[in-house]
Length: 232
Image (cartoon, rainbow, N blue to C red; front, side, top):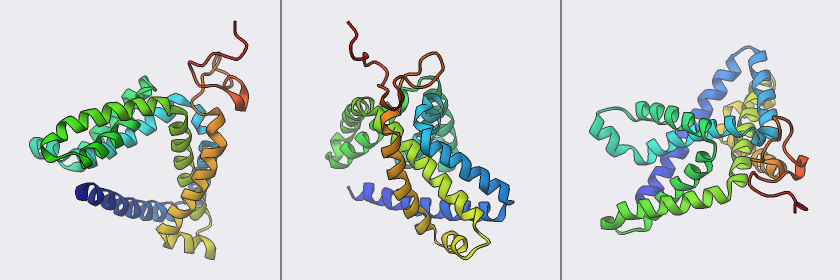
């Protein structure tokens, strides 16, 4: 449990530093770049959960990085590579695999926390077994909760991009400079916006698309695999 908490604390510190660096880069870029980031973020925040393959690819890449950071120490030690190199490889492989086969994304999204949680609670001599069982149970739950996961990922990505883009766009004003100077405020605003975006997208998240058009049933669309009401 101590190792898991330490890994989580390290991830929070890395996220804080990453946000600070990205906000600084966006603030120093020409304003059209910040405006474009804000626009893309708003689109993802509003309808991103409907795009199954792009969402799965981005989510899979993020999960690859997370897995390499939390579970990759034996691999980096054995292969003699850095965590950054392993993260890049894992992000590429996981992102490509999830983009080709989107259901892999919710399965991996459940498997990773399931494996970490089970390993943290298991005795040291039973951790390999706990990792496997936790990953299997987590993957099954992830598939069941695919709609929630898609809405949450799209909400978080869209919210963070929107807030960073807004901070960069308003960098010449006092409010923008204050937001850029406090990455914690950027993260807090992103969390609030992500919750709203997740709730908004949930009815249409991860739904089957008929003939490349709109999701079936509009905002009352059903996840792939559910039969429409009234079918005989």
